Image (cartoon, rainbow, N blue to C red; front, side, top):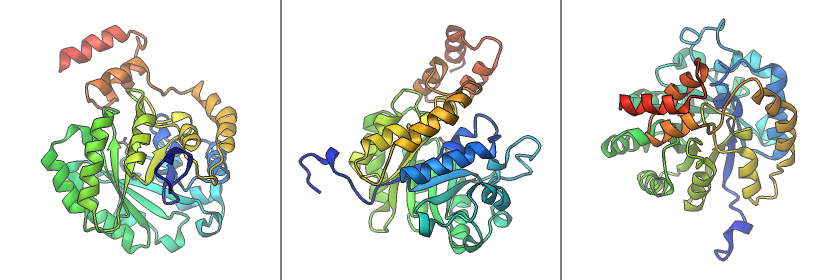
Length: 327
Ligand SMILES: CC(C)C(=O)C(=O)O
């Protein structure tokens, strides 16, 4: 690949993961209709997206079926109702589900990969849960899944905690170590620093570095591009940025930026128009002021989400004064 104008060429090894249903489901308790999930699936297939994360593999005890939709648990029957006899070897789209440390019955919940439409289990964990994450990765790998390690809330932990996590993940079978900016707090310089740290820790063991960016400071797309330029080859995005709070890097922007001719942004624009914009009229996401504020303060967006659901959602000033007073 020429280094003279790399933005007009592409890296074939760069893979896009669309997590609209998984991250977007955090706004509506994963209560999507089958038609919506099917439309996202078809759009990902037609657009040439490499991975689609169809939901969580989380515990039904912690997330009861009466309150949470099927995409919180990803039972095989629910997935097959939407994707039929999906076969990634034939159609090129790998299906992923996320399993959270501490919130998944992973010892009993996962089928062998050969009996599932899922190809990938993405293990999400906070730093203090790294030992469980290592066991989860080993278990999912033994069952035949590709696995990834997603250390959440990285902006909010110490350097030595990050180092300890990287040391523990390096010898595992995870194919990818993902930089997860859960609070949408990171600036370009911090992405650079984390990328180099992650890449150095994973050097020589064949792992890719991934990026999952939130849009609190309207930097999710910019930070994702930066991570790509640095060498990240696993990139998360969601359609129309749908995701918890401020949302995520937009899939349509990302595909527009990438020059691999296998990507086609048109099916994504189509699903935005017919499915996602109508949904946006009922549920809210995007970089609104309360999410900007929690992002700048390096806080979980929880307080901003609660504020937007409360009696005075547009009183941004009161929200600002409240969170600043609580620091
Ligand atoms: C669950 C994880 C990966 C996430 O979306 C986040 O923490 O931002």
